[in-house]
Amino acid sequence: MTIFEPGTLVVSCQAGPGNPFFSPEAMALMARAAQAGGAGGIRANGAADVAAIRAVTDLPIIGLNKVGDPDGVFITPTFSSAVEIVEAGADLIALDGTLRPRPDGEPLARQIQRIHDELGVPVLADVDSLGAGLAARAAGADLIATTLSGYTDGSTPPGPDSGLVKLLVAELDCPVVAEGRIRTPEDVRAVMDAGAYAVVVGTAITNPMDLTARLVEAISSPEVWRSSP
Ligand SMILES: CC(=O)N[C@H](C=O)[C@@H](O)[C@H](O)[C@H](O)COP(=O)(O)O
Figure 1: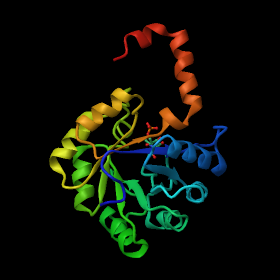
Figure 2: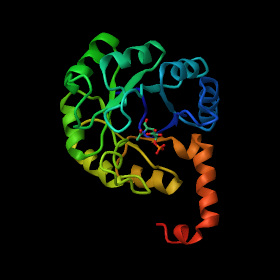
Figure 3: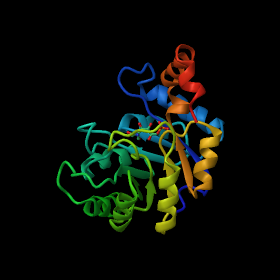
């Protein structure tokens, strides 16, 4: 798996409805800024954003397609949802690799096999646990990412899940990508020290609304931030 070199920072350029940056043009600008800052890859959602980003950079793109129930399996949940993302220029498909029921009932192994055979790209499985990571690797995933840790059980801790990175690294024979709530250089160091192959950062770089809200909150609730780890 040589799409990314070890130690790559991937910047997730995603914006949803309600975000003023919700446009392919804005995401392409984010990707250019990320590349200028030294990022080695981009993660992007939807065919329009992937195509706009492909037009402005040769960096590897992890493409995904968020469709369906946001409380269920919704990151590239089916083979058909992956097709347009690869056609738009993605080099790798990210998909939900949790153990939850899939919307079309197709086993994860079958979806991954079809992406490999029919689309010719590797697959990164976004998981939430060690068990899901092992199952996704057994199902054929080329890389495993901690993306969904904290989002399937309602726990959502403030920082990254370095513990899961470490567990996955110890058990898997493929690259483990750290993703989710990585906000600071210390967070990056923690996941790299845990053995991450690459690091994906989204919100802390590409979501000015969230960054603003966090600083506003620090003004109105300073005690919360003084007691933060
Ligand atoms: C849970 C989920 O749906 N994660 C999504 C996956 O593509 C994105 O919304 C995140 O921004 C991305 O994973 C990067 O994480 P963070 O924004 O925390 O740096």
